[in-house]
Length: 157
Image 1 (cartoon, rainbow, N blue to C red):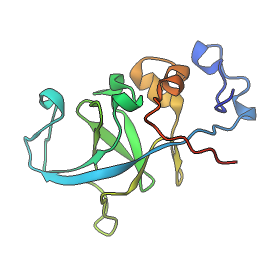
Image 2 (image 1 turned 135 degrees about the vertical axis):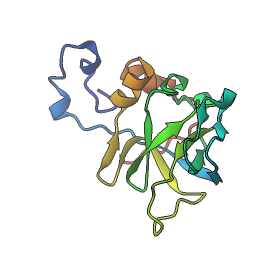
Image 3 (image 1 turned 90 degrees about the horizontal axis):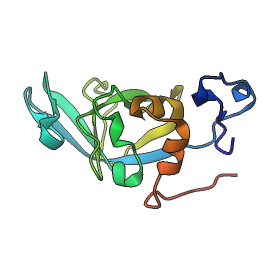
Image 4 (image 1 turned 60 degrees about the vertical axis):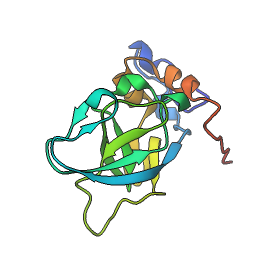
């Protein structure tokens, strides 16, 4: 319960304690590059995603070497950017994740340096450890304990 998540939730026994807990972990990264790609352009290892329309892609500074589960690749996983859910594109690589930011309003540009939430809340939107674990075919504890020493820890009291 250290992370504010009921350990029974992933067992199928329900989550009798979750209503008394508050998730406390937020995992963030930054946008490092934004590119406009044409229709038919391959993204990530082995062109595992091919754009179906002109697509604006943000590259994020996080990958499986940081503990972000590679197994979410191609599983309809999301991150939060400007409080909106953005779908992952292609495979999670060792040091980077690519996400689709095509549908952001013109007045809300996505630029390098923007904060991205991998786990936690941003505005009214939320990405839970349970959601990421489900996409990866594992449990929340695997996600929590998989975050590597490359990820800076900031304790907020």
